[in-house]
Length: 180
Image 1 (cartoon, rainbow, N blue to C red):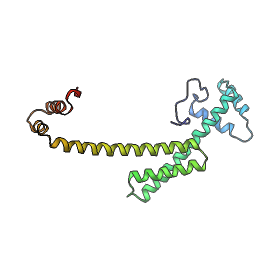
Image 2 (cartoon, rainbow, N blue to C red):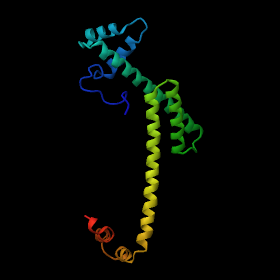
Image 3 (cartoon, rainbow, N blue to C red):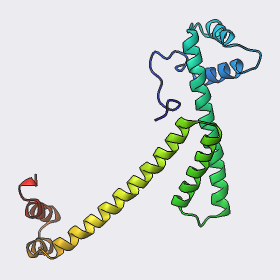
Image 4 (tube, helix red, strand yellow):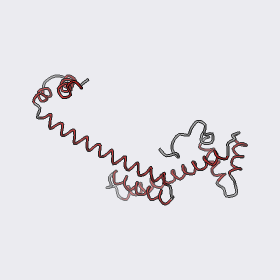
């Protein structure tokens, strides 16, 4: 989880302000003629909140990154909506790949290494999930084939016992002492 998206610490005074107040402060302090010192003064006057220069600077960096991430997500969502409308035959995986490429390009253009790392991690996690699912499916089929040839397992499965009883008997037959 990136610093821009995780829940702020309880002692992060500025980050705990409402979204509306933070947005007002950000717009104020990013006006060319306004200094961070004036932004800190505004916080103290308007919200009785006194913060150090370091805390204010850290918040400003965090909020800027957060804003860039939101804008990036909105751009990508709009582009993917357009792509979905233009090419409805695209699968979810194909759209996801396009979104990943777009996001990678935007984070590189913005020189945002943390954002780029997050994008790459999401792609890797998706691939890992797909590989795990494929492995599970193959392993399940291999086990089915093995159990299909097991005469005792077939007798239990084809019996007229209730499903819960069959499950218990098959569990004991297949897993032995490990069945609990």
